[in-house]
Length: 301
Image (spheres, rainbow, N blue to C red):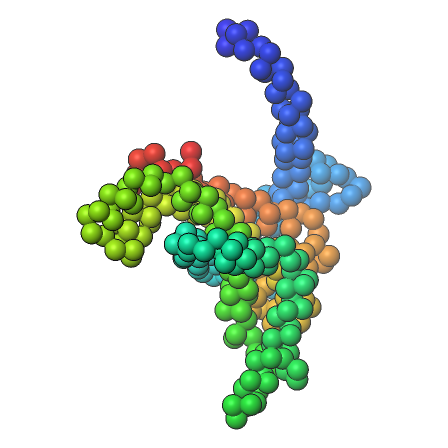
C-alpha cells in the first residue's frame, strides 16, 4: 500500500492496459477447462462431462496415430529452422557490416528485407514456380542437363528440407536487421585497437563481433525456443495446401489442430493447445536457467 500510495499516478496510468490484459489474456484462460471435459454446446464449458486427461491420452495414443508424428514434424522443422535461422541472419548482418559502399549496401539490404513482406500464399506460388512437375524451373534445368525430372509434389521426402529453406529465406533479411542494429552499438575503439594490434578482418569478426553479439543471440533463441512446439500454420498451408501425398511429412501441430477441430471437437483441440503452451513454458524456463548458469546476466529473465 505504501508503494501504491507513492506511485499512485503511475498505477492509475497503467490501469487501462491492465484491464485490457485481464479481459483479453487472463479471463479467456477459463476456457482451458474445456481440455479436461467432453465439451458440448448445450452444457457449456463448466457443465460438460469431466473426462480428466482423456483428451491428452488420445492425442498421444489415439487411433489416428498422428500425435507423435506431428510433434516430431513440428520439432524437426522448428529446430533446424532455429539453427539455420540464426546462422544465416548473423552471416548476412556481418557481411553487411563489413560493406563500405553505401548505395550497394542500401540496395542489397532492401532486397534481403523484401521477402519478409510477402504473404505465405505468394511464397507458395513462388515455390510452385520452382518445383512444378511440368513447368517448374528446377525440372527444366534437370531436363536440360539430361537428368530425369522429379515429381516434387508427389515425393514427400524432399519437403521438410524445402519448408525449412523457404522459412529461413523469408525471415533471414528481417532477422539480420536486428543483429545489424545490435552491431551499430558496438564500441568502435575495440575494433581500432584490434586493428592496431594486427588483427585482420576475420579475426576481428571471430574475437570481437561474435562474442559481442552473443547476448542478442541468446535472447532471440530463448524467445524462439518458447515457440518451438508451435508450427507455422500459414507457412505449411500456403506452400503445401491440401496435398494429401505430402500431409504426413510436413503436418505440424497447428495444421493437425485445424483438421481435428472439424472432426474431433473443441475439447480435444484445446487439450493440444494447452500441451503446446505448457511445453513452451517449460522449455523457455529451463533454457533461460541454463543460459544464466553458463553466463550470468545473459538470460531472458
